[in-house]
Image 1 (cartoon, helix red, strand yellow):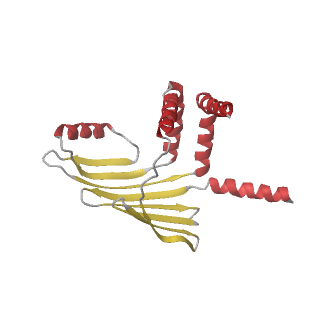
Image 2: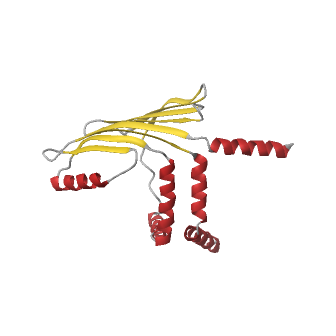
Image 3: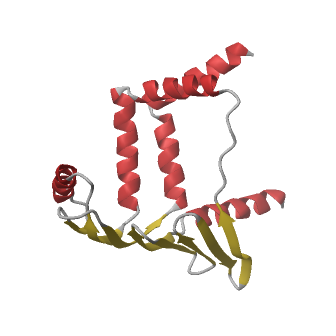
Length: 210
């Protein structure tokens, strides 16, 4: 009996992990005012969430599961992260990790994984508006870079301004993700030989230090 219950629970869990989560976002970025709204819908509305950011300094969130609210109208303000007590050790560990990731094979496997995940999101959106910098030459470089960017179903309608400094952008984005697919892709990445050697080596080093 217990085995059947565990099997049923695992089947339900796997089914839930492969139900797509729909997400969307739209916002406005300007010199004087910036706002953004982000929302998610999962399992045909079983779970719905919405977050509103005002000037990226504070936010309001609402979530519900079916008809039941979860922490509705929760207000969040940013706080400074605690100071590190061992900066030298953290920097050394971070540098070792970056050095390992600079390996060509490691970079290739990570890029392939990210590419597959990116395609699975089915992103659609648009970014439009005007922009400029203090230096017209830099503005020109940015305009040249934007002109060669081509992303399926993502439109960039950006106009550079060379006469004055300005920033006025509006955009929207929507897509979906499948949690189970992300878990499988990340598990597959961790089992690739170049990646596997990194975390196995770190585990052995930790074990030898104890």
